Image (cartoon, rainbow, N blue to C red; front, side, top):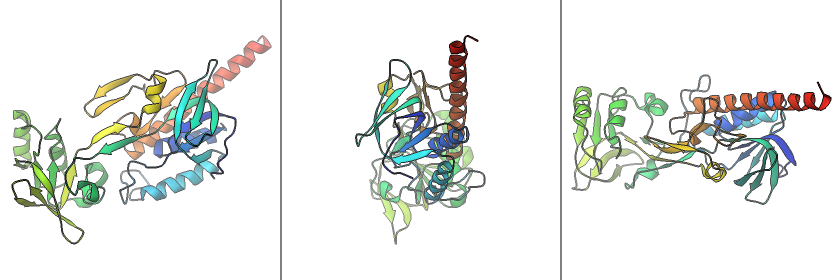
Length: 317
């Protein structure tokens, strides 16, 4: 599937090989477009043993999902290669020159950027080691699997109560550790009380792990609060360097600054679309796949009409 060679030009180069990028590749292949998916690896959900909420694929491992998707796009002639795109430069007439870190280059008439994001974890001893196991962040992704266990939540510095309130739907035993976050607002304090959430003040020093199992939160003052699952809010950093270099407009969200797109994924840069977590922190796998599908369909239609208009103009019709 990856022979390390690239064609001179493609209709579309998809930069990023996760759910959004592979879904775009599938649509483009079925539309008989020449397409290349460039995958740098390191998907956001790689630490998780399974993914949830994707109809017919609920519980599938992320690695298996990607392997199946790559086989599917190959069946339609879409190329896939492992590599890191380091530059995408707009050409004077139409399209882009795409350069990979290993020196390979190619041209694309259109680009879809699906490079995802990075979760920056709180600097608390033990969190990184347990990430994706009993330290999680999304109740929609993993809440059912840990339902009714003793939850701990490390307060997010911007929205200290939000995550604890959300996960209270999956367990009646929720403790919010304020850590370094400010006190919740009066409105949120009322909601926390209504949800039965216990609030613990003071800084968290680390996690207690016994026999490869998270068992509690160790406070800086020496207290240990027994817990079975820990939710943490991450700082989400989009991998949007290519989009920034192309001059794509961005906007501020509660989860950070993300590239601005329309309902089809079209960015402010002509010929460039974006989909998946690079456009927002809350794009789950099924949403990302949908975004890639939509972008690819719109691009195919645009290319078709462009080519037909050129033919019509050339024939004098």
